[in-house]
Image (cartoon, rainbow, N blue to C red; front, side):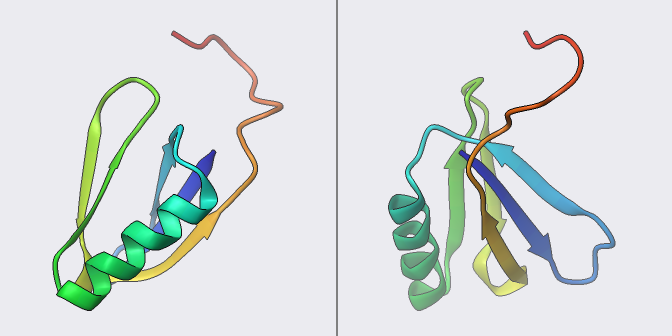
Amino acid sequence: MEVKIGVQHSPRELVVDTDETAENVEKLLADAVAAGGVLALTDTKGRKIIVPAAGISYVEVGGGVAGQVGFRS
């Protein structure tokens, strides 16, 4: 599942390829915003991405990463 996170005052978005479901990402985001905490996602390579909820301007949850060109490790 591809998740794009727009961060305030940043011209680029974060793109995370994760095994989480869309519903789970939505729940994690809602919990982070309600608590004023952080959104923490783990990508498919096991890296953890942590974004302060107050700095998130939008989150786009997509279908996947089909059609990528190049090598994947």
